Amino acid sequence: MTTSTPVPSDRNQRRAALYRLIWRWHFYAGLFCIPFVLALSLSGSIYLFRPQIDALLDSPYNQIQAEAARRPLSEQVHAALALVPGGVLNAYQLPDGPNQATQVLVGKGKSLLRVYVDPVTAKVLHSVVEDQRFTRQLFHLHGELLMGSLGSALVELAACWTLVMLLSGLYLWWPRGGRLAGVLYPRLGQQGRLFWRDLHSVVGFWVSLFAVLLILSGLPWATVWGGTLKELRQRAASHAVEQDWTTGRASELAQRRAMNMPADEHANMPGMHHDGSMSMTMGAPAAADYEPLERLAPIVEALQLPSPVLIAPPSAQAPNWTARSDVANRPQRVNLVLDPVSGAVVKRVDFNQRPLLDRIIGYGVAAHEGQLFGLANQLLGLLTTFGLMTLSLSALVLWWRRRPQGVLGAPPAPVDVRYPIILLGVLALLGLYLPLMGSSMLMLCLLERCVLSRIAPMRNFLGLGAE
Image (tube, rainbow, N blue to C red):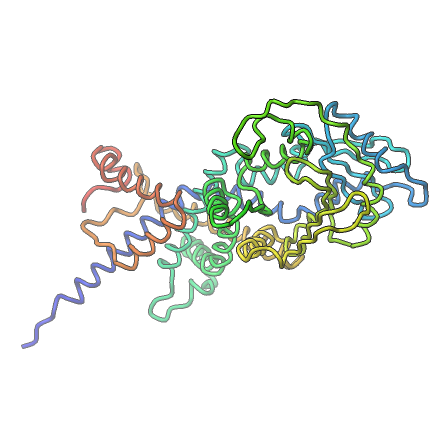
């Protein structure tokens, strides 16, 4: 007489409980992330084509007579400065061609004005506040929902939970038992719920890797994660380290304010002594001298750095005349320190001379913005964002079709299920690497166990009741 052992049954029950547990995490991660994923994917899809958009918006000011005599650059700069009383030259942008207007960035405090000047007549053609340019507004919408540091933290939190959604989704939909249809490719001819299920699983399977890379490459901009990384870099370095990206709106404005403060004014401000003593010397700064532009612009232009190329006078951020390539493909960027008298390049820093961490982040940021390998990068980014939107919309349809009446429709919480060691390790590593997600995960667990599960209406609505 043979008897069946209950071990396989117990094992199957544990697997089913674990599957349901991960499904529950997947559900709640999607519930929180989907509105953000849709908004960020849409704004990111447009921002991928920033160079083309900026070129189109600047095209009305690229009708200058190429053969006409040009006014001195200092005169063009002063024409732009006249629009902002008390403003200073933040940077002069080299024209990309003989028909382009001169672009002058005029700074005052935290503000920045982009002025288009006719180089033939030195008359202002157009001006726009830098933060009101379409692509800059799109950048702040995508990075911080136009809400400053709070918005940046929300976007970072949504990005972290999107990682949970993608990783848990891969576990749930991973092909089992040799079944590839409905996971690697859709089953043709399906309708109704099966159509949406296959659409969700197939798109999720193929887009997840690119989406994870997209999220990780965007973290250096985030206020919390990026700010922590910046702090660690500064502590590890033996001297002050300048990074090529900002970490949130506050970081960007602080950097801009330093560039808008003349070097001599910075030296005369109180509290500038290195020994910590206060200086009360408040002598008026000398009038800015922009004559070196006449010598520096042709020399920098001859170097043929990737555009846009910006030449900046001494400021609180940099005590010397500098030039930099601000090209979107960051591995092509170059920074120069210039001698204003002779025009010689005193120092040149190419991308491959930067610290390894900066180069890794530079490649990631360029790929994130769709600029690392041209149009193909833009199209790959567009495919990824469209995939994320398809994933989100199909999830909403599936949820709407299967939701029970009167409850949220979350998978019921399994009773007495144990987290496998591997899963706990993955969650711990994610929580340490993404501290904002780790803290929110702990808060969510405590809220569910200590509060929501004790309130009968909420317990039933969220599916927290014991089975």
